[in-house]
Every structure is written in C-alpha cells, then in structure tokens.
Length: 413
Length: 182
Image 1 (cartoon, rainbow over the protein chains, first blue to last red):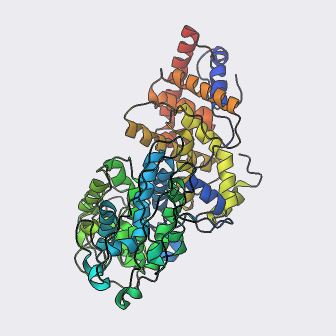
Image 2: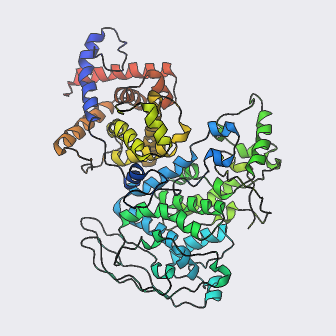
Image 3: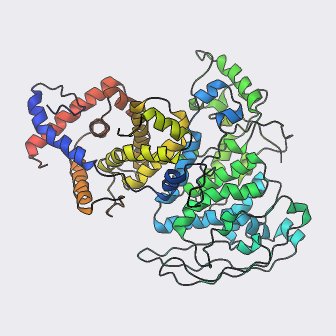
C-alpha cells in the first residue's frame, strides 16, 4: 500500500486496490507539483510590500482599498467577543479587488477605466468634465455620501459650476487603442493632472505601451477652487498624477488595475470626507470595479455596506447582545453573529437603543442592480442612506460588524 | 510545509503585515492550492490561486491555529472559490485555459506534462460523482485528514469516508475495465 497516501484503503484485498490506484495517486501528485504560480498584480503588491506599507520600489501599496470596511478590532474598542469572532469582512473586498487582476485585458481595461474615472473624477467630477457615464458614477457616489453635489453626466454643472464659473466642455475620451497581441481595448481616463496642479499643462502624447499609437490628451483649464470649498479639497495626492504616464500617453490598464484601488482612499482622504464616508465610498467603488462579471446574487453576498452606515457601535452592540441573549438557546457571548440569517427580521430589533433600522434589501438591490446592468453602473446610494439624523459623536468606526445590517444607526448628511 | 522557520513565527510576522511572511506562506502552499484548482478544472487556476491567497492574507486575523489548521483553512477558501466559479459558469467541471500559464521560473516542458496529467486526472474523475471527486482530490492533494476534509466540504467525517470509499471503488472499476493508461 502506498504508505504516504492519506487515503484509507478500506476495501478488502487492499493490496490489489493499491496496485491499481497507486498510479492514479501518483498522477495526481505530479499534476499538482511544480513551482509557485506567478502571483497576480494585486497579490504581488502584497507579497512585496504587505497591505499597509509602501514598497521599496515606491509602488503604491494595496491599502485600505481592500481593507476599508473595518478598523482593527483594538481601534474599534469592540467587545472582546467581537475581536475573537471577527468575520472575514475585509477579505471579501480584498478578493473583489483582486478580480481586477484576473480579468481579461479588454475587461480589465474597461474596469480600470471606470475606476480610474472614479478615482480621478473627484476633481473632474466636480467640474463636470468627465464622460457622461463616468460622471454619473462619480456624481452618484459622492452625492449620496457627502454634502457635496456633483453634476451628473447629462445635466448642467450645477453647484460647482455656479461657484467656479462655466467651464468649457472638454472631451477627455481617448480613442480605442490596440495593445500588441491583444484585442482592442478602450481606456477612458480623466486627464485631471492639470486640475490638481492649477496652471499646469496637459501631458504630452507619448505612449508608454509598445505599439500603442500616440494620443493627445486635451488640456483642461485650471480649476478654480473657491474659498468655500478650498479647505475641503486640498489637492489631489500624487497617486492621481502618477496614474498618467510620465510624458503623457495612454495609461497601462494592467498598472492602473493595481494603482487605482490604493489610490482611491488617498484621494478620498484628500477630499476631507468624514472617515466613515470615505470608507463607504471607497468600499463601494472598489466593489463596483471588482464586481464585473459577478452575478447579482454573488454581489449581494460579497458587498458589505456596513461601512456606509456608521453607528454608535458600543451602544448598539450592547443592545444587540441583550436581545440575542434572550433568544432561546442563544446564551451569552454569541459566536459568529454575522452568520445568523435574517438578523434584520428579529423581533424588537428595530427598536434597539443605539441601533436603527435600515432597509437593507432596498439598499443592496439598488447597488446590485447597478453592477448587474453589464454597462458602466449608475450607482445610487440614496437607498442605503436615511433622512437626516443628528450625527452621533465618538464613533468608534465599527462599520464592519457583520450581520448587523438590519440594525444599524446612521449619520445625517 | 517547508517554511524554514517555525510556522508560528511566520504566522505572527504575517499578522504584523511582514511581506516576507506572506511570501513564505505563499511559496509554501500555493503549488498545492494551484494544483488542486487545476485538477478540479478551474478556468484559470493561477489567477484563482492569487484570489485565494489575497482572501486568506486579508482575513488572517480571523485565523487561529497551527500549521495543519492553516493548510485546512486555505484549502477551504480555495474550495469555496472553486465552487463559486462553478456556479458562475453553470457547469462542472470547467475547461482549463488553453494558454500556457505564466509560472514563475517554470520549465515549459514540465508545465506541459503537468497540464496533461491534470487533464487525465480530470477525465478519470469525470466518471465520479462530484462529491466523490472532491473528496478524493482533496485528500490526495492537501494531505489533510478525513476530519479536515469534512470541514472543508461541510460534511460529516462519516460521509467523507463513505464518499471516499465509493469514489475509490468507482475509480478502480473504471481503471480495471477500461485499462485507462496513466
């Protein structure tokens, strides 16, 4: 009998069995042997620099783009049972973002383009100069989660226009380019380098990708930020300008797919959004990019909007614990709370002090409907947000508590 | 698992976000994970392997246990990703990508032979019930115990033993009757 096989040859005459099946086992062993496979771009960043430190090469780290959902347990000050039984929320988004690296070239470029617009569009979106579908994505996400109102793709420039003055329309859609040996891809990127550096010139057309024809990126007029919002938008971080290749040209979609997830939170931080809002927007933008090709049912299971609805965690958790302890057979210190199905339908849950109900199904449906459309999604987070409620203070930022989507408090806009 | 250092130290370093620890864990376990996904017919086993490890590293704080438990945990993630892919594709098993995988430092000929072996294994397991094939391949590839495999598949150890027994019998019958060369 092959002594090294972890198989119990329990049949009679097992020597005969072994002689027949041993070659199969050997075949399996050979088929699974070999060196480690080449990691995807997203994983390579982690292997090189970890999740939260810049690499020696200065590449952008994979940071909160894949870990925005929750604080470290110690930062949240959560009850110990939560720290010990934490559900794998952050890994879900990390996995979603990793899907960007796994897409085919055309799909990857499209996703990179959409998220590039989302990342760079905080300035471009404010100016209303992005292509309409992209403008809708950025406007919906920002409008739903912040006090700012960005114009949508089809309308006038709205609030910002009224403050900054009318901006001339600028077509920033790059023509489709063909990469060598690959199907044609289309990369749409907002040329906001000049918006982040007022008075700066547009990058010169110089392709970095071999065989890609040179394109001329139109220059944008300087974006004048009025004092009223100047303190809030302090300027875009270097990761945005780094998305544009040195000397101009077409961004490499594969490189964008790695840089963008890490750049999103940096841009949001620069916009001085409340931390919970930044986490929410970043999580949803990341999920949009990573959800390409996923069925609505899968997206609903993978997307966690809990970071979009910060709460007074300590008060809600204590109320929740009291309720769960009263459940038959529940006992104290309930493990795996996040695994309890239908938590939102528990009787009395809607009236727990410190918690407040949210129509989770409507929220999830609004998002999954957007990502399942097969085209650039028009994201509307308004279904996930309540009407104005006084902003609670001292939020521990525990947006990552699993399974409590049906019992979350929220902040007012 | 060949970490060159105690697993506990590697795990602690990974929890401290040390890149070398991630690299060590990846290099130690990724060949088996990728191989398992390959023989199970994943469309892009290399990419799916990266997804598995990104998910594992991102959720490392939720893991607690020794080396064997870690191996079982990562194989659990891999099997669930595979299941998700099967559901998304609507069929099983999936055809492997026809392109030669981008294996870091790999030998092309060895890779080709390995892929042929994987195809032969898939062809043999195609005659088994899906659960039987999962049990046999998990046990052979991961080297985990019946109990660990039961945890991965969400079944009882008794059920896993029964599936293993029936799978082996079916496989033996086919090998003897058809004289399938290996």
